[in-house]
Structures are given as C-alpha cells and as structure tokens.
Length: 115
Image (cartoon, rainbow, N blue to C red; front, side, top):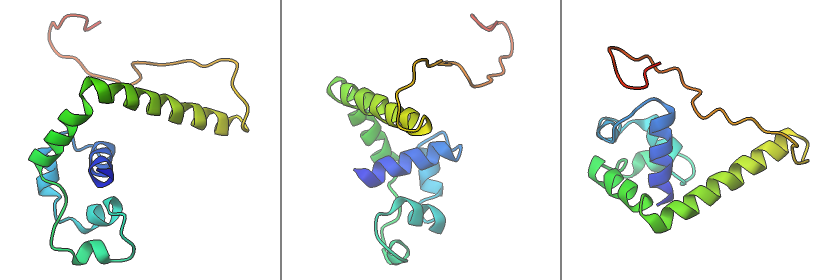
C-alpha cells in the first residue's frame, strides 16, 4: 500500500492525471527508484514494474470509502499543522488564510460559474 500511495502522489506531482499514465511509466527507471522503499538499485532488478492502471483504480476506490475518508482527512490536517508549526519555528500560528481555489483554471465557452 505505501508504494501504491507513493505511485499515485508522484504521478499527480509530475502532472500525470490518469491512472492509464502509470502503464506508460511502468518500467521507467526514475519512477521505479523513487517509488520503491528498497535501497540501492534493487527496484531496477526486480521483474515487476509499477502498479497497473486497474490496481491504482482499485486502490483509489478503497481510499474513497467513507470509513477511510475520515482517516485521510485527519492525516492531511495533521500534516498541514506540522508543516505550519515547522515554518513558524515550532509555534502555533495565530492566523491562517486558506486559498481553496489557488489554481488558475482557464474556462472556455459559457459554463456555469465560469466567472
């Protein structure tokens, strides 16, 4: 499960949006090294590559179950709190601004709420 999570996070971080992209990167040496928890060049000598699209889809479905969403939400909040305290010398912040739509999304046509 940790390698599946690392696979999904690295795909998103690199701009790969679909699980189908994992199939194209299945044997990519850089991805295999970055996702594996094994030391050295061991990930490159293993016959099995990265997880396939169906495996990643099943993993996403499992994470999206209601009982898992609570844990994921709590973990995300904990990590954010740790990061903010670390940036502030270990002290709690008195104010935080949350920008929930910080990505510029170009909209074409007359879609609802495009403004």
